[in-house]
Length: 380
Image 1 (tube, rainbow, N blue to C red):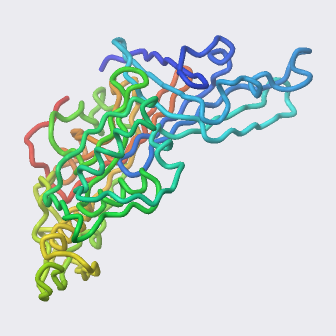
Image 2: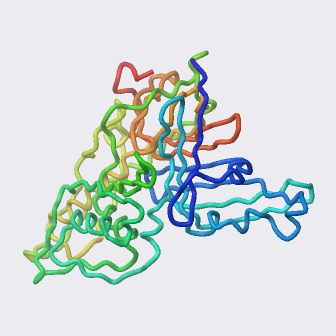
Image 3: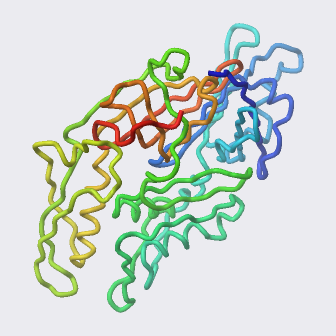
């Protein structure tokens, strides 16, 4: 397997991210970027901040740079021989200075989150009359308050579109815009996250089910000699994860008690033997929501059941230079060389990129619903 070189581009600035000045590029020691489908993604930049000359007697020069202050914009792009891809678009939220007694050995670290953190700063009490959840999600993401962050909504219509009459009930948001987006997504087993790019300072906010379709990424290879790119991997199975939901609700529209029970998972199976289908026993939880119609209760019960199907987890580390690509969270990847039980297609739920001079590794978390491959081969 060919070993490729990688390029890193850092854009940073108080309001508009521009190429980092030479003083920051020279001081940059390490970059970490974490992408996940659960909650906000984040980043961390570590700079050398030693005070070694007469110009540094008063303070470390990095502390006075406006570009490194809280809420400055940071864009990280990475490329493998071709056009770089945006890995992170976020804002700085924390700073940490670690002095050292050794000359020039101190470090200055800035930590931040993706631009969705700007949607999580102001709690509100807002009514959304005569609007379904997908319409509310589109409205919140498209708000002019976030126009500077280039947010474009990618909202998937849920299985039940509930547009209440204003005379019947009014959906009320109590909390930040981001918290309400996650709250609505959870009702259907959906996820909500920011996808940076493809251009710098442009972002797509996805609100919908986990993406388990499309072409898988290049394969993660285990124990395959020269083709191996995975440094280590661990598989874990949780027999208590799959969950059914049952119970009864008093239908708000008819005032009658209606039995509610989730069906088999509606998500496409990634394994030949899904645990939710083959385990001899499955946990059952009661539905405890009230004030719903039977259709609403069934949709929420099914969403809870669908969200519980990923009972097998794989965690490990891949050498990005040998892998030759960015392993991207929130999509599919093939795995080979681990044996039939664990080979095949997986959903990438989290990736942590660790970049420093001469080294680039990607820590990953993969999930799926059981054992056995559904495909005869994966993309090499």
